[in-house]
Length: 422
Ligand SMILES: CC(=O)N[C@H]1[C@@H](OP(=O)(O)OP(=O)(O)OC[C@H]2O[C@@H](n3ccc(=O)[nH]c3=O)[C@H](O)[C@@H]2O)O[C@H](CO)[C@@H](O)[C@@H]1O
Ligand SMILES: C=C(OP(=O)(O)O)C(=O)O
Image 1 (cartoon, rainbow, N blue to C red):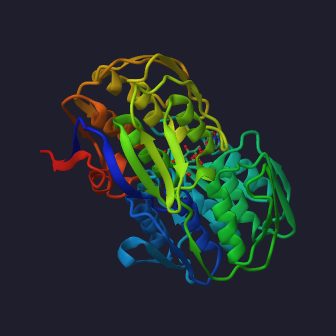
Image 2: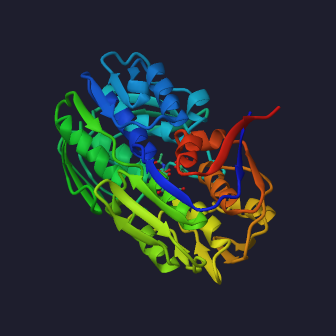
Image 3: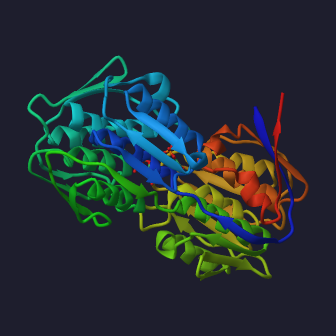
């Protein structure tokens, strides 16, 4: 199994290219199931989650061809000959549940394994089911699988979500494109990945308005056609790498970075005393001198501070001047990185969904274990700012969401290498 070894670093300098968004690509790929014609995605990230989604789509009869070293995904769902998304693939990745809406819309039936919980929370699918049932689907849970059918086809409806769930919005949005009549999703998620999905669906012939706001209106059409669509920039990879110079010092330009994707996060960086400026090619982040200031953060749905950047921000707060309070409002168990950061000398108290971080002068390298994707990368950032060597094990979590992290961070002067452990 691979581990990542990082050594405490001086200032970082240079440029890091930001990839297409994992979380956009994972919903754009199942959109191929909605049409018999090919869908091609450009600017795709090279990640293990993308391979898992390719495997899942392949198991349903779709063809996914990876071109240009994985940056282009050419997909065709001409022949969908299986309607069962098997537990063995779905359990590897929760986003597998995003085939449910498209399969139901295209085939009129689907059987999809319930993904189950994961390290960060229980993550039920009640809102996905609620929305699809409003569209006329009949859904039953049997043997751990959701058995969904729409004997009379899907029909447009007004669907008010109790919480602005990203996945539920995506599943309902995709299903509604082929439903009869008009669907309105109220309290829809507003994340950039939803806007990217709607943009791609429009390129395929769907009629959608209001994406990026809380009310999305979809006028169903009879069929969707092929398209080529560039995946939006990964705002979480962007935010993660913005924290590297903020934490270690130096100046790094994030190529392809866009302020509108990370505004609430950048507001917190400014409060902490970090400079962020827009350039022709992206965003430049600099910390020239002085200690980072402690700031409080509450995670919220977009446009609020993203939960997927909470672990990384907590790592930086470990050596900030003062005390910061981090409130996690999206997932009930997303502080698994705290005990590992404490092994590196951090002073953190966790009570329920609140973590209080008392800044210390320095972290110290240690052997630590990654528990989930963003926890893993928070430990790498902490290791770069710590004294001595940090070994992060279980980095398969990391490979789900960060392509070639050693190359990207190594390229700006970080001491980081991947090793194989027995
Ligand atoms: C592949 C992907 O895009 N993953 C992202 C997506 O996950 P995901 O789509 O799973 O996140 P949701 O927005 O659905 O979940 C947010 C909260 O709603 C709850 N919930 C969700 C659905 C449901 O039917 N019932 C319910 O109670 C969840 O348990 C969680 O507490 O958005 C999250 C919130 O920004 C991000 O952290 C994930 O990185
Ligand atoms: C929680 C995440 O992903 P997923 O929803 O795929 O588990 C993430 O990207 O941080």
